[in-house]
Length: 274
Image 1: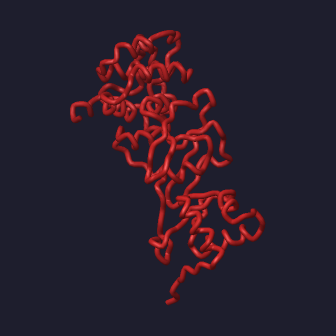
Image 2: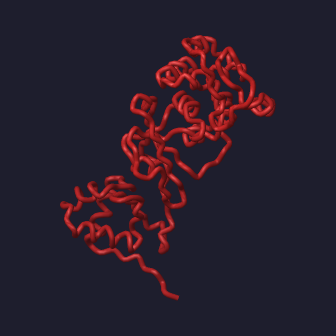
Image 3: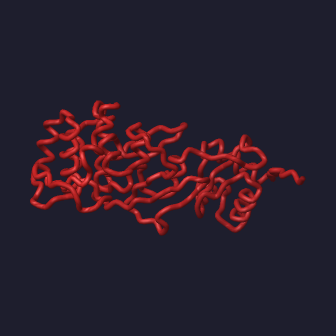
């Protein structure tokens, strides 16, 4: 049986050593060029060779993951998904179901990472090392409410707790549906600033977000009177589906102008087990 040996020449060693010294487990071609001293064809050939010899993992055009010695001969290694996500598009923040997982607001486990950005990507998703990265376009006026989180000595952008819920109510298809959002509201009720969330919901501009949020807060019996007062302003006369992923069925809840196409039997029974 042929044994695979990960060889590394002096040029490759110098490049990877300096990138490692700078703490760059993930890096771009331009960052490599700054270390190497040029962007000519020699650098491209070197990076190609390092990928071939399994010192690097190419995650996207012009973007690489440095594989350490611990990866072994087969170069079996990965990096935290959020850190990889931070290199795939800019500006960005980790959001939707991925942020719900980060805050511990959902029991669902997903092998997809949801990345919000006002910049459109040519491909809506990308698979890297067994993880699917899904790019969610958000209008520039909706691109706000992110914070910087520390992760393995690095920093990543992630939507804050309040913006995460507002985004999920705006686009339930990226959150697992309205039942999961209801659970997130309930699980996070002692950590969430509901007035801030209500203000975010207004800033979002989609009245359906305010209607769904107000309906859920009352249905879950969450004490958020000031937030509910803000949410109830200028709702309009049209009705929004409680869950946009489901059909036009269910009763009309006049107070919040919501068509409750998810029954109470499905929406709240888990509360008794919490």
